[in-house]
Length: 136
Image (cartoon, rainbow, N blue to C red; front, top):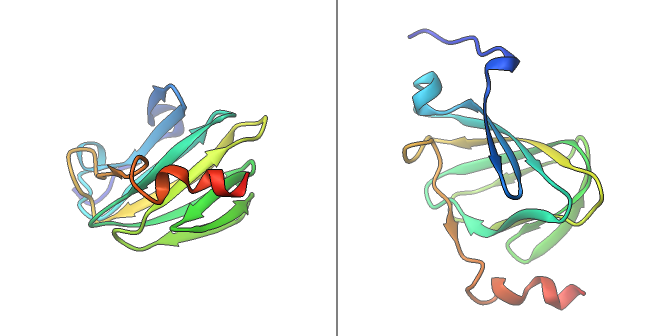
């Protein structure tokens, strides 16, 4: 296959307790082996706890909303137009403590696993389990 048009109304959307994933590119949709791309929406009061992608780089680009982003033990508030690069195996987390949804465009590469990405949850390990408590 040389490529694939994916109209917006045909993006595979997955509703989760914390928000929504809009799968733009992953191996079973586009046959990509190098890029997993998604639109991520975090509902207010939700996010993605401390985790890492062992064998993948990641780029997060903020489309709308403001949220708390961690890159290892560094915390930043990110807003529209901000971006973040994350090297393989680096622990990170995203939290929407605001009142509005947060929308992100996220890419990971190369593809890993059945849906193109693998996340290892480390949120119960030290120091990640209590890191946010230290700032409140």
